Length: 476
Image 1: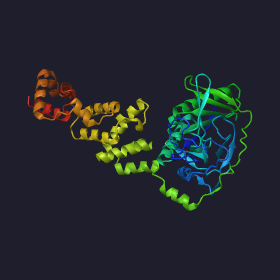
Image 2: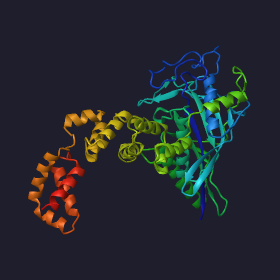
Image 3: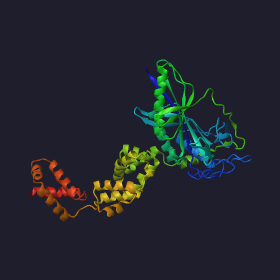
Image 4: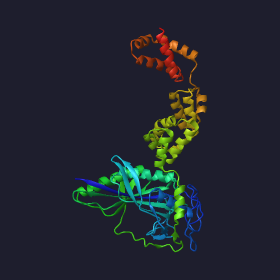
């Protein structure tokens, strides 16, 4: 049998405005509970919302970046439902006249470029946060209530969890590049819901769409989609179907868990928000926003190849996130050696970040520190191997490389008199290696250089050691 997976995503991204969508309360993450609140975002009777213009601007900026049609006229609507962290009993969102419609995000798959359609991007307010205690009670923190969001809704154009991951990565990188959201999933500023079902292409039978909620990382989202993909195929093979369900991912059990069954479509009783006037979006304003949009990932990638003369693959990786691209450029600014910077980041730094599941923002040292390390290696003050050891210490302790080299006495030995003395001792102890090298065994030279590095604890200049050993053997 041949099965086709259909995946659509709904992404909520908190916007990086200083104040909330309808009041002047701070959007800063991490404040004491219920301190970033006022009568407006607490939904007190008699209060009136005032729309934050910057929220509309950021929504338009996202729409332009994703090639959407920007509305000429739009409005806010009341979405009515009950939930404890929804202070007013309704959410101010958008319904039939979203700020942005259509659009697309292109991803690079193994089969080539694929376009994932977007249905809409609209602006809305976030809800509060429920905090559940071990004794079964719940507390509510309304600091997040009224924080501005954009909701991005895709077409069900993704046919595998891997495609969905590529889509999410591209979307996240773009939102960061255009500086509308920091997309920190651990802080809840980027949240993803998944709609997934399976079609039997031989019979046309298909499962009912399952909604996956509360996915707090791309890794969890992919695992949940893979689980649901197998579960839905199993249902088709058994001749069964599922009701329209909402499920959550249980990391400890590595499976999705039923949250609720939807017998009917939710009736949110949308109607226009009477306290917020309709908006007429002027063409000149949209044009100015478009002109002011920061450099997009694909543009930066092309510039890196041209300006820094690095391979396309390196440029692709280095521009995968705005933070990484900024770190690269800042390091280059201090070294004027873009290829060496690319080498260090692409190998040692990214490997360490992957092993420890860190982001570039999490490291303890600065771009200037990395530049100083590269200059120490390029200037011959430390060897490349010593440089890698220094980098490990930088990761662990956050110290600058010059301090580490000074404290640990790692300056490279370039003094020829000292190297001659060390090498004479090594050669005296390894006459067979001299004979082997003269007989054409090149490995013998590498062994002798290795003995010098061992004797000097890696501090000898390997190029000079190699040269001196050759000269001495040739004179034997």
